[in-house]
Length: 281
Image 1: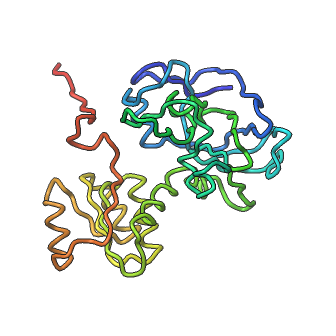
Image 2: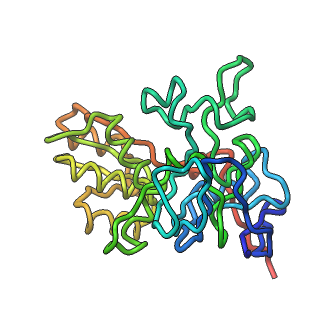
Image 3: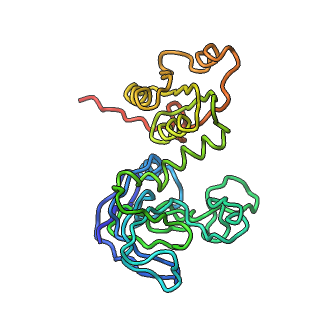
């Protein structure tokens, strides 16, 4: 099969790789019909996340058709269309029983990237996201092995195009979960920092749940304009105004009910920001 393979920072290549095979009774193999590049894939591409090895297959936003299923797979069969969530969860550990699947205790044998010296568990394995999170080959490939297929995959009914459901793999649930965590509801005021894909999904979710006023902060005019037109946000370009001051002044000096960080760690001005300098001549 062909897949997007990491070699080093800023060096990824589409190459021929071995086809995946069933390894556990509850695995499935899918033929990928749609995949996406996540903002967090850029962290990998730029060499910002430890644990990537040359030869790793990237990608964690993908969907496809089941072409093979292990003998313990009960919920799916060959030919089913599925969207695959980023997180690989067992469905039966302490955290999965509380529907906290990203904290699954059993699927990731590695250390994660939690920055402390204590023995807290690392959280669930992730597709295509370094050997800190299981080293599981990702979805920017023609075929993918999906572990724990009775838990994660979302079966897609006929009549829905890939483009209508692909975002269920990661980007839409991320924005929606942020809105839920912020307690956003009817009449809420919300500030969303970052107008990239997660910020857009958060704005869509906030509007759907009845938010009255949504401020969106960024410095890319085209992103702010899109969010204004699609979701009725109040755009704030932090290159032009003090965003916090503007929000306070436009909420009767009370501030907002919820604030959502949809930026990522390579934000403008952060130590991790990548700057491209064009050489003279």
